[in-house]
Length: 326
Image (cartoon, one colour):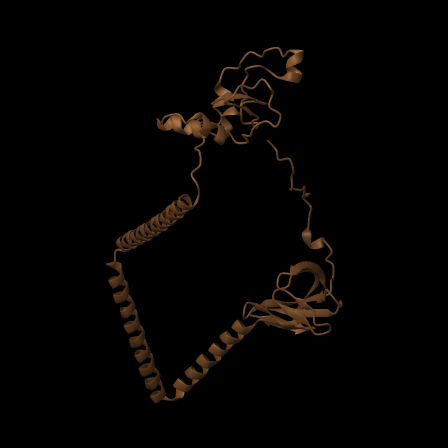
């Protein structure tokens, strides 16, 4: 089965590639490439910061008369994103990096400077040891002493790790948790004890206040017992409604007790108190005196027999008036 896109082409038998004319292009020609800024830089014209990774449509060219071990060096042209000033930088295959050439300054190259300083110190040391054998001995002594110190510190760290390896962290955490629970339980018991003491003190104070108020206040009639549940009336069976007569609307029902009759307390007289206590009933005169407003009628009828008194009582008495024989 043949491929869908065939890249092979037909070459005739008399094909000679040397006869194909070659284009003569300039060596310093430029190409438009898409690249990202290789490092952080700041424009010298306007001070705009260009961060690493910013994309540009740059022009690329090969630097003439410059190479490193046969590797060509390329130059890139970009424009500032603010003032459109031209910025150029080149490749640095020797240090596997890029170098700023024109239009901007490179930022955050402390690490690069540190590496360069270390390389310079190492080179100076090698040059010094090359011509001075005593310096070589001193440097070896310093290196051996430094190595001994490093080994001692490493051994101390190993011993410390071994001592910590025998510690049972689970047991420590368990003990800490148990102590925390005991502390919380003890605090809760103390709070409950204080709460009970405060409740007892308030109850004693309330009892003392109630006893003082009962001694000062007069005895009152106790209220009749009410049903234990206020909603018990809802559980009762509904009663059949009786038809209300027209005369009952104005006069009222006969023999019917209102629903709130038990909330009304009837004032008791001396006669009722004496009967409840089991004493003899008082005399008629004492009853008359207790009823009050006992006086002879100003106009006694001529038919009043001797020894009788015409009385007019109040609303608590015997009605509008009557005779009482003594």
